[in-house]
Length: 264
Image 1 (cartoon, rainbow, N blue to C red):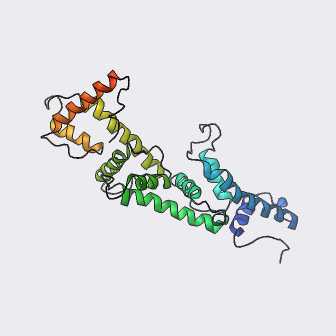
Image 2 (cartoon, rainbow, N blue to C red; image 1 turned 60 degrees about the horizontal axis):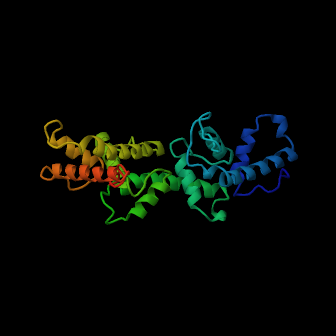
Image 3 (cartoon, rainbow, N blue to C red; image 1 turned 180 degrees about the horizontal axis):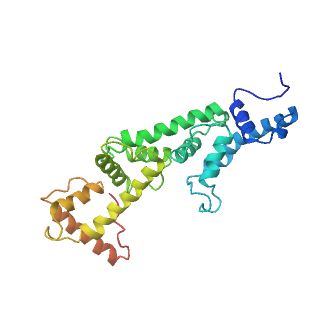
């Protein structure tokens, strides 16, 4: 009725978002002005697919890597396209889900992308509920578990540290009594660092122990659990430590320190 063309169910909320972003009344008081905003809305949707979804980091403005978009710019881009509920907490999971959707026609409307936001939240929940409880790759193979981390926008999880990361999430859950500290990408990304640290601790702090005097047995056993390593007991603890020292010595002689003992 206002003579504005090309506003559809697919881009309506993006058009509304662009109208809100234009705060100068004189720049949206004609059909031509608003028609221009319709074009900007379509461009905002395209920008999410062409540029924003490629980001797997979200550093604050001024600290972003070369070629990467800052956190604020990515969030603003989703807002400019009329997409709700994208926050610093789930942004990278949303980007990951956008990348996983490879059919262009399934992410070219506000409704499509809004559905992807919901998938991102589910992907984060899935890690805590279904992946972290796994202490092996027997029932659910490594590829499936790794894909789940990737789908939630978590980086740096590999076959080598996967079970250590799972173990660290379980440890955090036990410490919290709930999952309040495991419901964002940043929370879960921190567990990747913790998993790597737990593996390093085995090599630098635990394996050198030849007895349980300086560091009691339970502390050493707990360290193996934290690193996702199974079946280390009071009975075999010192033998396991000895085998790690033996492997380290062998690696060092081959100029490959920790090369064969830096994974679960």
